[in-house]
Image 1 (cartoon, each protein chain N blue to C red):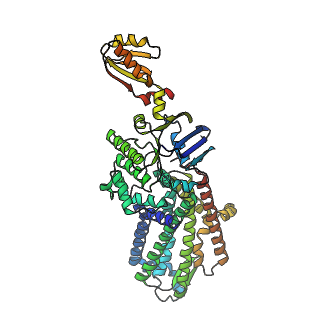
Image 2: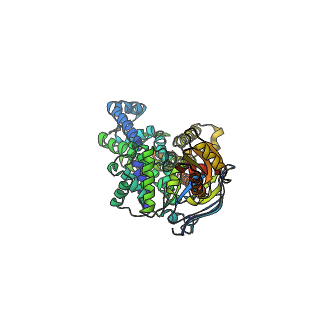
Image 3: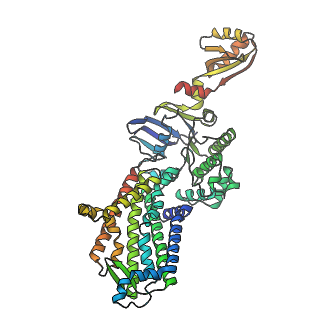
Length: 302
Length: 278
C-alpha cells in the first residue's frame, strides 16, 4: 500500500444553528485505500463528507486533498474526485447516457462516447443507456450514481451510503463494483455506510465517529484483531467446555445459546489458544468463529 | 462559461413545463385574435363613436397594430407569472431535486454556475417576450394588415402607420427589461429556499402588491410609489403617449437596471456562502 496522503482533515468543526455536528475531527486517507467511514445516524458523517466536497464550509479546521488546501484549490481538487452524496439525485427527465454526458462535461474533461458506454457497462446499465432515469428502479439509480461518479475517471471516489436502500443482490453488486474500482482501476475510495458487513468485507482502513468526534481510526483488521469480539463455539459437551474455559482468565461473558453453542467475548488472538485448550481437554471442536465482529466492535465503540 | 450556459439552456428547454408559458401565450393570443376577427370592427366603432361625430376616420383602424397593442395591455399582467416559473425554479428546484449538490461536486465555480443559470433564465424571459411579439405583432399584422394605430394612453392618440413599428420595438424592448427585473427577483428568491413554489409565490406576491400600490392614486402612497419598481417596469406604455417622455423612460431604464444589478449581486453573495444541505 502506498503512503501518499489523499485526504488529510485536521480539527474540523461544524455547527448548525448552535448544534455541534462535527467537533475537532481529524483523519487521514491514503492513496489506494478503501476507507470505511462509520458512525451512528446523526454522528456527522454526511456533514463531514459535504465539507470534504466543499458543499458546506467548516467553521474551523483544514482539509487538504491531493496535498492541496481545499479552500484555495476547490476546482482543481474536485476535478480529481467523483462523488455520490446520499441517495443519487439525477436529472430524471434525461436518459442515463444524457446524465453521464452532462455531468461528464461539467467535470472539465472531454468525455468520449465510448467512455460513457464503458462506464454504463461497468455498472450494468448498458442495455438501458437511452431510457429516462425516471423509469429506473432504486438499484439502477444507485448504480447510475456510481457511474456519474466515475465517468470522468477521478482518482478519488467519495461515496456516501452507496448501498442505501438496496436489496441483498443489489448490495452484493454494489460491493463488487466498489472492490473492482479499487483493485482493477486503482481508485481510492472513501465510503460511508451503516452496513457494517460491507465495510468489513471491503475496507482496509476505517474511521468511526460518534457525536461529531473521532472514536477510532486505523487498519480494519488490526483494530478488529485487537478488539474483543463475540466468538461462537460449537463443541461436543458445551457445559464441560464452559467449565474448562472459565479456568482461563482472559475469557469472559461465557454463555450457552439456545442452539447449544458457546458464545463468549474474546480477543481474536486468543482463538488458537481456546481451540487448543478445548481439544487438550478431550472436547470435540466442530466450529469456532468470530460473530459480527465489526458490528460488535462498532456497538462497543459508539 | 459558454459550456455552462449551454448546459443550463439544455436543462431549461429539456423540461416540458418550460413550454407552458409559450402554450399559454399561444392560446390566449389565438383566442383574442379570433374574437377580434369576429367582432373587432364593432369594437373599433364603439371605441371611436364620439370621434366619428366630429372627424372623418379613414383607413383600416382595426389592424394588426391595434390588436397587438390590445394584446400587450391584456397579457402584460400575465407575463410575470410565466417568467417566474423558470427563474424561481432555477436554483430552488435543483436544490429540492438534489441535483444542485450533484453539480457542485463537479469542478464548477459557484459564481459561474449562478451566472449561467441567470443567463439561461433571462434567455427564457427574452424568448417569452419575443414569442409574444411575434404572435401579437407579426401574426396580427399578417392576418389583419397594418395601418394607423389608434390608442388611448392618457389621451386618445392616432399614430401614422410609419411611426408605429419603432414604438412597438421600443415597447417590447422595455417589456423585456421589465420582465428581466421580475426574473431577477424570482431568481433572488430561488437562492433563499429549497422548493420552487416559494420563489414563485413570493415574487408574485411582491409584484401584485407593489402593482396595487402603484395603481392606487392615493396621496398617501405618493412617496412610496416612487420607490417601487412596479412604477417603472410599466413604462413601455410611455412609447404610446402623444409626446414621449424620454426623461421618464431613461429614469425607468436606470432604476430597472439598478434593481437588477443589486438583486443579482445579492443572489451571488448569498449563493457563494450557502451551505448545500439539500
